[in-house]
Length: 138
Image (cartoon, rainbow, N blue to C red; front, top):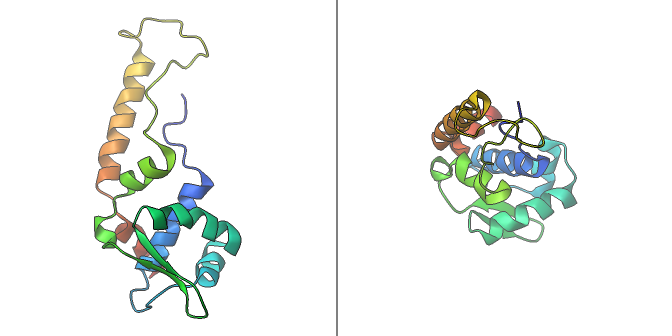
């Protein structure tokens, strides 16, 4: 069966970065250096993947010796499904397991199963937030 959810490294880093920042509310800003070290990614890569998140208004960024990132939105209100769609686009519509479809769309059991799995994943992701992921960093 095709991959149900294929999350890129970029999306993984963004979600965990937001969660790491959320796990440190005592810090006014969380430095790129600290986040990059925690996630084992380069500082330049981290800054690059977080740039669109700043533009979307979920993060604030500041430069300088005490610079870094801070959340602009309550982490309990940032749904993982919204981040996935923002970064990856909508989940793909179920397709045939073969490169060229071989059976009727309406009777194919794999297409039906694939749609059930997709709908279940979407429903579950609706219930998870950055705050939920941040518990892994406390």
